[in-house]
Amino acid sequence: MNKAIVIGSGFGGLAIANRLQARGIATTILEKNKQVGGHASQLIKNGYTFDMGPSLITAPKIIRSIFAAGGKKLEDYLSLTYLDPFYRMTFHDGSTLDYSGDSERMKQQLATFHPDDAAAYDRFIDYTREIYEIVIKDGMGSVPFYFSTLLPFMAKALKLNVTASMYHVVSKFFKDPRSRFAFSFHPLFIGGNPFRSPAVYAMIPYLEKTEGVWFSKCGMYSLVKALEKLFVDLGGKIHINHEVTEIVVKDNHVQGVKVGDTFFEGNIVISNAHFHHTYRDLIKPEHRRRWTDRRVDKLAYSMSCVLLFLGVRKKYPKLLHHNLVLAERYKGLITDIFDNKILADDFSMYLHVPSISDPDMAPDGCESMYVLIPVPNLAANIDWSQMATPYAEKVLTFLEHEFGLEGLQANLDVMEIFTPNDFKNVGNHYLGAAWGVEPKLTQTATFRPHNRSEDVKGLYLVGASTHPGAGVPGTMLTAETTEYVIAQDFGLI
Image (cartoon, rainbow, N blue to C red):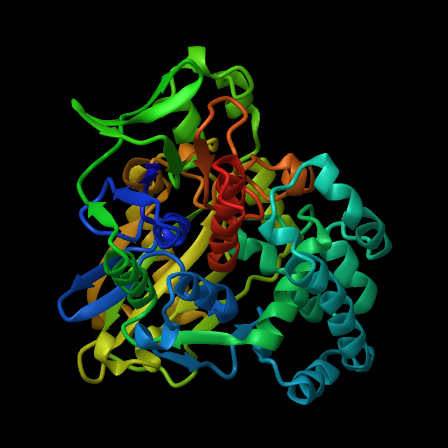
């Protein structure tokens, strides 16, 4: 009987575990931390509830497919609420864009930036639809990607110029810098640089428009708990506080894993751990001909971020559930983060306020806030043990005195700071790279780490660093791809 071990319980790990268990493969999840969810964990303090990682639910069809694989319905485990607008962008000059799926409302707002941008909106959406059809409808995002797989998609992809950067393609449609930001920033949601991430990621605006942005009561962690319950209902086993210390290999075949001195047998092992950690730390070098230490280290890894979890005794009508607060610089700031590896004086940020949609996530009259500021990964010369508090204070001062959240600091009940050091220490993220392998052209599709290990038979990967990539829909699609190759290898299709 086939037995599968899943290392890590992030969305990729939960998705593949459910898919394999639904196929009748006895599956066990081993999670390092004290709760399931991996990067998508939860913090509760002083009556405030915070999601600590992903915060947007998009592509509910992909999520529904996981429950359907187990013969269940998503609605029996989770209730989703549609958000409209999806998020509010506030630019450095005080102008705003309430980004939504409503074409007319979007065009009315874009017209105030530049009349030609309103006229370009429909053409841009038509363009993104064609990319969406390649990735989702034609299945590019849910099949293993090798050069042989790439060929059928090449003609369409080249016609759509998806190898050009996201920003380059968007700038062909829109003229105002604010419009160009609004439709090119999405790679940042998956750890990418919009000025070098390929335009294939332009499918994200179409995905949002057609399938929406959603919220579930109690936040994103309710989706984690729903997938956990589904897995247990299907007969799967979960062990928390079980950090895998070695993937055991014999004669080029996986045998199982070790947690300290305890051995867990399995002829199928799937790692949802950080890609670098999986190969560099868990597999002995003699078992790695392709993914040598040098090759793993040489990959380009994503940016990191600083997270502030704020419990605030005040409400701010100017905020929506999802907010982007933007500096004047775009390309220059991105270059400082990704390439110059410096902590710039200015910053852009994502401000998540889920208590607007679910008041139970904060005490009465209060807000639960999560602030995400992109910063360089640990390849930068930044001592976060010294910089964390002053940097957080700088962000809070900006939010209060420049963005207009009056009385913010005087009304703080809770402030927890999560830095690149925490991504490294809590999640085993190499360089504190919050999204793993950077999604640039030379690390996309067939050039991305594969879902089936080239080094060890019976070893597979899911999660942000493998095909098709990061983000909640992306990591769940990695599980679909990995299920496919496992089914191929074990004669299940």
